[in-house]
Length: 201
Length: 249
Image (cartoon, rainbow over all chains, first blue to last red; front, side, top):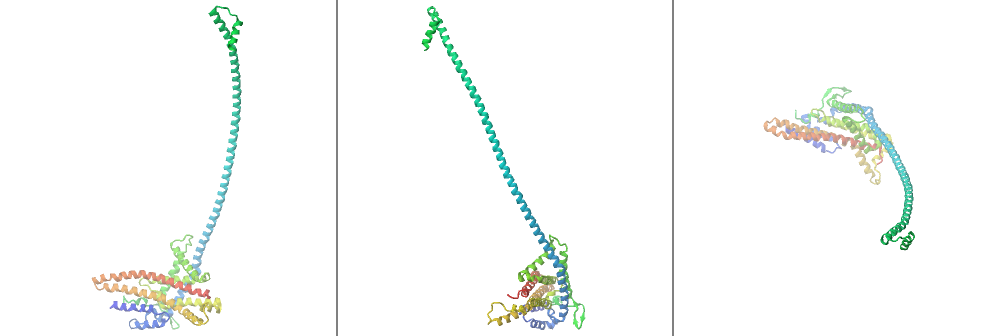
């Protein structure tokens, strides 16, 4: 019995929902008539407590509104604004730091480039100096060597001349000795040297 | 009457008050209005008391509500509409908490009574009209005359606009009220089936599983409806408030 009664009740709000909202008075009237038999006035539409509900809604909602308006909303907006400001400030600081870092990097790059140029310059100068040193040294050594070579060659030709001069004397001696040994003739020195000169010529 | 689905909407006096023949008693409805407002304000107050630069979980929730409603209002009514932010925020939080608290068994749903939702909706309309006329004077009534309408059909269009404007508080309030009412009745009916069937012995207990599952599913659905209807109520408020600040559309 309870169940069927409950079923009957569900239909009332459903029809109420489907009703066009333009005429709540008629809907309310229909509701009250339908359920009046057992429950009296349908409670959600019962005008008996309208005044009390309006009054207490005004009090509670009014106080709630005031608390929100005076305390909670300023506090919440303060929190959010504070955060927004902080984030903006931090972003600004970060941007500034980034600019500084960029600047420092540029300075560093420039310094690096300068240092590189300077080092190349130094290396080039050193290389040039080393090369000219080496050239000078080489030239000196070459000159010395040339001098020594010339001296050696002079000596060689001198020795050679002496040796060639000695060859005549030796040949005269040999000729004199050979003739004496072979013929037992006493050849004079002049004849021998004459003969040698004739042969050598 | 444990399974009477209407019983949950009954109002009874906790502290009877009568002034000038008007019954202004502090009822269970009043109690839950106090609970709703107290809980909403208490949560927002307590969760933001740390004023953390990096929010904790609860503070994040409060900030989320704040920014959600602020975004909603700014999108609908522009930056000029932001002067109504405390009002919309209060409405959203109040309706949301009232809907959610009502889902707890044995708790009263404030928003399931037409007079409550209608009072809130008529307040919105009053604010729209009051501020509109205060700010724009009589030219505010241009809100009823869409631009670019041929003069021949203008009276007809204006009539429709006026009717639609006047029916706003009704549709605005009935939407929330009917959703809450229907949801709670349906929940109660299915929960009632569980009790009724269980009384029938072993077979009944077995059969009661189906309505039990239905009740669980409906609870989830009602949770969505509770949040969604609070959102719908708030976004419609934002759209109506747009007429107060921008009457010439």
